[in-house]
Length: 330
Picture 1 (tube, rainbow, N blue to C red):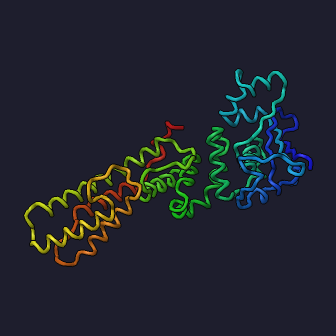
Picture 2: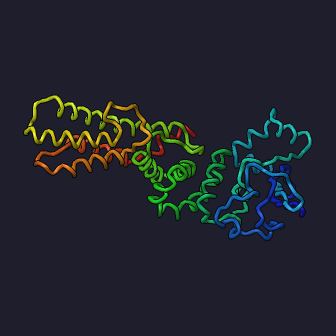
């Protein structure tokens, strides 16, 4: 089967080669439309990063592009085609360069090339969420934020209507998207959910999220969890060693419930080092509330000061981070 050639610029001097073109792509660029490129994301051998041997019935996708368009849209391509880089040297000496694309999914890369060359009619206004994540990765790598600024607002519009679900089910992917495409409110919301819901060490899942953002969330979460642990241990020592405030019976009941709850959290024997893999802020808050609800022996409250601390901390963590605070990381 012959290879597929998509000619975005007939006089283009750069040809990208993607082995194993997706089977649904037509052979002619004129037959391609955005409905084909908005299909649900599926990964098969045509998009696998580990490629088997090429066979005669598995065509490659060749994308002819203009280096001028690429350099105008992308800071990464501008550096690539400078003197001293292999691609730039070959482009100047031969007049044309072929670049294999091995690490990217074919369809998102194809969409990016269409945008760079003004063929936005090929770009779906509502891409599949997985493709939107891949687009964010590409945009960050090629540093082409301005080139996609208008389209990215259209892409994220529908997803922002269900961002609470995305922040819970795919938090790091949604964080990556909101960071790259600069969605201020959505960024604050998802970072707030991550600070509240994440267990242990916050991981990027290999997505291009700056370490400064991850560190800020981790530090905030650890500080408030650590303060709650301190308060619980102080109360435990108070119930164990200080004279009863109310009565021995009340004191023993409170001590037993607190002992059991802290054992369930894994923090009874000693204050653990943060981050604790098994613990999220919301998990800690819920367990403390459960301890309080289980104490019905007396009018004394079990851990009122701890709950007050946790409620105040919840309000602070739930606000999330301000996108503008991290502009220097781009």
